[in-house]
Amino acid sequence: MYPPVPTGGEAPGSASTPGQYGETVFPPDQAGEDERIDLGALAYDDVTIARLRELGAGPGWSSLDVGAGTGSIARRLLGELGVTRVLAVDRDVRFLSGRPQPGLDVLEADISAPGFDPGRFHLVHARFVLMHLPARRQLMARLGELLVPGGVLVLGDAVDLTTDLAPTSPYTRAMQALWQGLRDTIGTDISWTPRYPQLMHDLGLVSVAAEIHVPPLLPGSAISRFWVETWNRGREAMNATGLVDDADIDEAIRYLDSPDCADLSPGMITAWCRRPGAEGPDVPADA
Image (cartoon, rainbow, N blue to C red; front, side):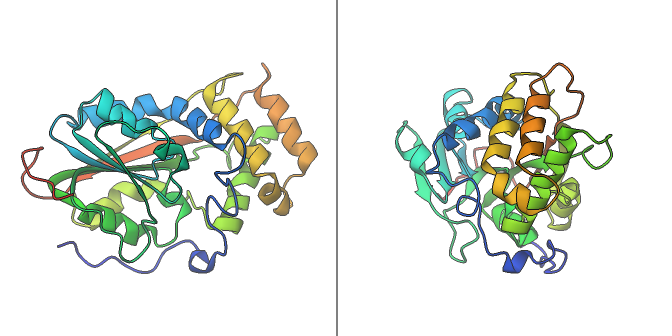
């Protein structure tokens, strides 16, 4: 059993935030939303798969991919790493269900729902999920409880190392407005993500470690195109902050695609740990 999870310390007002990711912002039925998600995958998937490989994911493993999006990680777990089974979970599975694959099961569910309990897994992976949800620490504990003894929990989220400290530019103004707009509308909070390792340790999980990857902002790169598409879809929330208007966002987009761009992108922090107990895929997963 894990120790009780403290109830305090969540993002201010997060419990009463009216909107949700996929509804208030970034609805999946908006044209091109799957392409925006795939741009993020192009920027980060290789890093994630390399880490999962290092952690031993492979034949015999049953995996849970939370917030699976278009399924890029789930499919690479099966195809490249040879994982036996992946359960891909999302609140909207339209980008997953249209491409069946042996070993890939799809579940439309909300991980914050009280009854969410899809089984036990050797690997539980969630990327760019908890940052958008209230009660984040409680959800981290819940995901840890879905592991078999010795199973691996891998969590990735955004981390912004420079926006508040870098010289003011069209890019930094747009990024500040994005984070504030998402926090105001759906409760997104990336200020806590550097605490991942300590939170995992406090939950009684072991072999805790973390790394940060920051892709370069180059004209036409996947990460640059991802931010352009994200700003375009988040304009209403960004403008509502009063920090930018449409003209400012357009200027930031031009700057991001110019040779004058000299800023650092937000990156991805990946933290991992194990549930105490026997290690490896020989432990049966009841999923």
